[in-house]
Image (cartoon, rainbow, N blue to C red; front, side):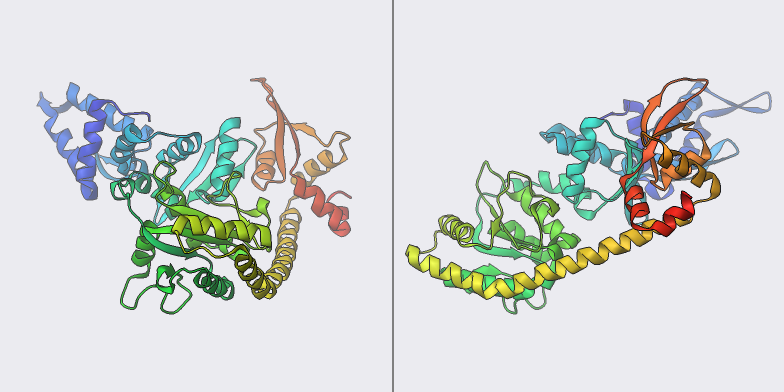
Length: 447
């Protein structure tokens, strides 16, 4: 982490201790460092050093919106980067980073808070970071991603990302060596029909009903009078087995993705304290799965071979009484048959949903093209009619910047010339798709 120098660090610490009115603390300091000479108020060396330290904090994004009056600050704001500086510094000394965590840590350091939203408005990423960033996006650690050109992005942080390192380093989690012999079923409430049958299936395997936590089943979820979030968090921490029912509904739920992320953090291969299982329903494809499931993670599917393997691993994990192979086969076959109608309906709903979503996306993209002005359309025509599908323009042009912002064009190559900057631009793929789909719009824009 880019650490502050000791003097700037001490000043930041004072600011955080007096967060509600830190400009007053700074004003008082300026009062100490000023003196009168021949009737005039002059600055001393300490005053200049104080201004330099304040500038370091502003330039570094630790504080902002500092307003001055009579040569002293009277209002300002402490940014998220400033609030988390000492926590992040301490964690950096104790965390063994992998490439994904290193990038997440880097992004959290430059984040800005606006109300309840924590985001990064603009950051350029190199080729390696862009690959790692895509993993963060797939895992749900960054949301509302906005691509700016080919190398920069803006995005928001969900709750789970903000508390990722806090959870990772939590001593109560790290030092935990015993787990309750219980099963936690993580699922979307929209998949209630399936998880009820799954819970019944677990009971047939020999797992006690009282040892299965499922929030959609009366008597197996949060007890009356208990806080839901606290109860769920405790179950995720304490239960030995976490079963995630991966569906389209699951992936669309931020709450489900947070549970998935928490399980991923807690599943420590070094101690084998916790075991994660993923049951994937056919309404979602492997390449559509995002969240804390890597390419090396195994998903159980609704077929005899996959479900039988899952049952055997579950038995080994919980030490439940074994059943003969034929009994397993009967239980698995019955479960697959019992859930087939739900799985088929989910597939049909998924297809309809994707078609409707695709149609809506196309309509929105058409609106973007229809709202282009004539200077923008002139550039669009030039690119479209080019034999190479590219055309060269000045990247500082306001029209080019507008088309980049609308994600109609992106820079395919840059030519570095200080006096005559030029870049080669081409369309984002969706432009060709929309123009091909709507001949009338194509005639209106291209001619």
